[in-house]
Length: 227
Image (cartoon, rainbow, N blue to C red; front, top):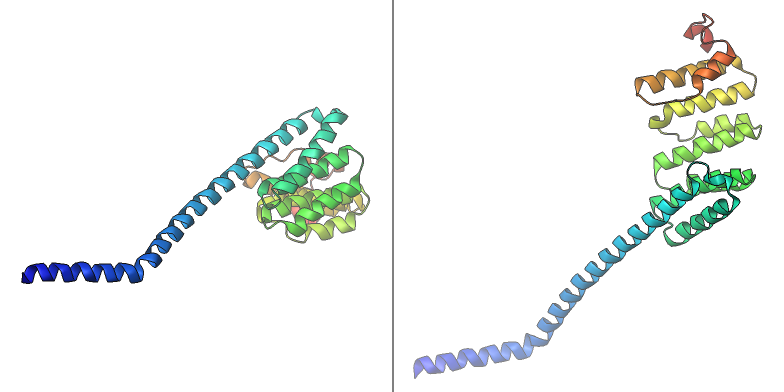
């Protein structure tokens, strides 16, 4: 009988505990389950968004590859894709890259101001240093082409990463050449070639610029070029 009373007391104690704590326990389990479900749903949403951004960006690449920009419809369609990628995936790398392509599309349509605006947006809004560096290089090229080589030199001095040092030196040489500073241009182009060679990076056209300048093979050494 003592054992029976002990068991009954344990049952009564369990009932009292359940009455006092059962609701909060069920609520806690429900909240935990909802959290897991919500996290999985968020992860799935993010994956779907990334897939959609990648697919749209690939379409953009296909429309702008090779000679596709000779077709005005392709240019228009590509710019619509750029807008879609930026609107729907504005914080992703794909949006930054789409803006870089949009600058090229604007140039193809004869709208250098739109191109500069697209590049300046990347510079101001992106948190990716390499992409910002690419935008600065392209903006500097546009500035040289627009006859504002001094502005190009200032652009090149603000945040082009070391990974793009060879390209930066090339564009700096272009700016100096546009300003009639042949010695500085030659020094910058020579630096570009040296950097590209040391890093095993292809850099096309720089040798031709030096040959046309008549300095690279003229017997001038680096000290003379830098003077």
